[in-house]
Image (cartoon, rainbow, N blue to C red; front, side):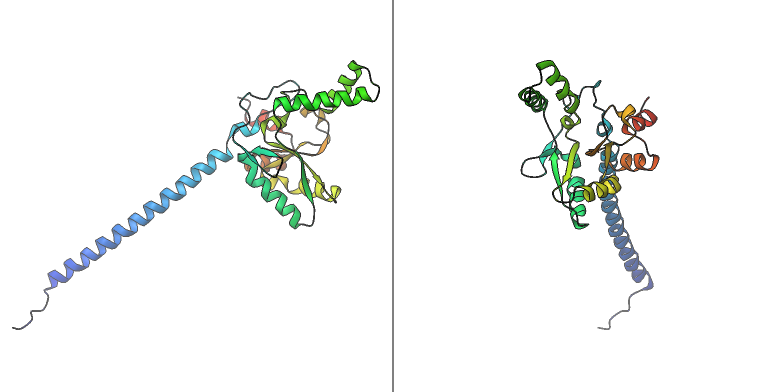
Length: 230
C-alpha cells in the first residue's frame, strides 16, 4: 500500500505542539529560577536591614534581655551571634592572608560573666592596696557595668594581633566595614559614644550600615539618630 504524505495541516499541528511544549518548559525553568532568587533576595534584605544589629548599649542604655540571639562558636573559646559569624570568619581569614596574625580577645559575654569580670578587676585593685570604693571606681573605668556591655549582644569582638598588633589594627580599621563591622569607639567620638577610644573593639552592624557609617565618617549613635530616630 502506498504511503501517504503528511498533510500540511498535520505538520503544522506537530510544530505547534513542540512549540507549546518548549514554551511550557522554558516558563517552568524561569519560574523556578525566579523563586530561587526571590527567596535569596528576601533573605538578604531581611538580614541586611535587621534593625536589631544597630542596638545601642552604653552606660545609660541596658542591653535587651533577649539581645543575644543564636550563638555560635567562632573558635574554641569565643562565641558570637550567628548573624555575624560568617563575615567575622572571612574578615579574620583575609586579614591573615594579608600577612597579619589577628586573634579574638573577647566576644560574647553574658551579664553574669560581665559581673564576674568587674568583680575580679575590683579585687585586683584592692590587692594592690586600693580601698574598696576606689577599687570599684577604678574597675568601673575599665569594665562596663553588667547589662551595659556591647559584648552581651554577641555582636562585638575585641581583636588583637598575636605578633603584629599595629599592622593588624591598621588592616582592620581599613577593611572591617567590608565585612559589616565598624570600629565602635573611634578617636574623637568619645563625646558621642560615651566610650573611650578603643582600637581593638569592633561591632557588627551589617553590610549596608557599615558601608554608610564608613562613607559618612560618623559613629553608630549618629547613624541611628540620622536614619532611625523616628
